[in-house]
Image (cartoon, rainbow, N blue to C red; front, side):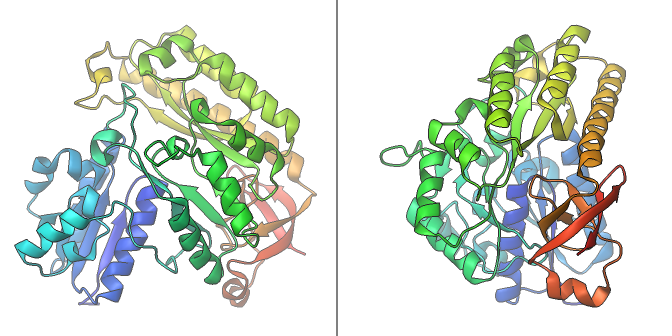
Length: 419
C-alpha cells in the first residue's frame, strides 16, 4: 500500500515491546508513509543487520520516510546519519513518545524531552502476540566488560508498583492470559525507588492485588540478584511459569571475573540444583558468550560442563565480537576460527539437551497457551507444532489454553495433536 507505515524490530524482547508501542503510535495518529527501524547493538553482527534492514526497508518502500531509533543508532548516530536511506534518528530515550514521529516544531520537541517518561504509554493489544509484554524496568547500572547496552539505555530506572498494576489490569481486561515481565535488567528493579523494593516483593504484591493473573513469565534474570522473595516465588508459586532464563555468560570463574559478572560457577550450579530439587518441573535457559578474550580451552571446557550439569534446555549462544568503547575490546582476542568452532560445539550440545528433554515428553498430555500452529510453547518453554490443526480453528483458539498430546518431535519442536 502506498501509505503503508511499518516498524522493523531487531534485538531483545524489550525492543520488541517498544516496537509494538511505536506501531501503535503510527496507527492511532494516522502517521503515513513512515518506516521505523528499531536497531540493536548487542553484537557487531546486530549493528550490521540493523543497517541492512534500513537498506531493505528503503528499497521495499522508497517513498517512505525512514526513521531510525534503538541502541545501535543511539550509541553511534554518525554512522547511521551517513546512510543515504536515513531521514531522521530518534533518541533511544524518546522513541516511544508520539511527538517524535509527527511533523513537529522545535519547542514542542524540547518540551517533550523535558517531560519524557522513559516508560512508554501502555498499549491495549499487541499486533501479533498472545502473551502481553509488561516492561517494569529500563537501563542498567552494571558495566560488564563486554557490554555496550548501558551506553544505549542509560542507568536503571523502575516503574512504580501502582503503574505496574494499572498496566497489568489493562492486559487482563484485553483478554491476555499470560504476562511476561520484561526490562533490560529486571532483577535490579527497585534500586531507584523509595524503600528500594526488590523484584520478588513487587511480584508477590502484584499477584495478591490481581488474583486473576494466573500466568506470569519472567524474561532474562541475573543469577547474582535473585532475592529471597523471588526465589520463594520461583519454587512455590505455580502462577510463575516453570522456566527461567539466566544471564550466565560463562561457566569459568576466571572468565566471569574478567567479564565483571557478579556470580561464580559454584553459585550457578547450586542455584540450578536447589531450584530443580524444590520444583522438579523447572527448566532453565541461558545466555552464553563463547570466545571471550583470554578464553583458553580449559575455560571453554568449564562452560561446556556447566551447561551439561545445569541441563540448560534453551541456549542463546553469542560468539564474542569486540565492541568499541568496552574494556573487552582492548583485551587479547581469540581467533575467529576458534570462536566459531566452540560456538558450534555449544550449539550441538544445546540441541542434544533439548532433544533429550523432548523425548521424555512424547506421550504426555499438557495444556498449552495456543499462539499458532507453529508458534506455541509449553509452560516450560519448548516449542510446539500442531500440523493437523485446521486454518479456521487457529483464529478461534488463539490466546486460549488448549489440551494437546505430544506424539513426536523434530530438532526444533514437539509435534502435538489437539485432544
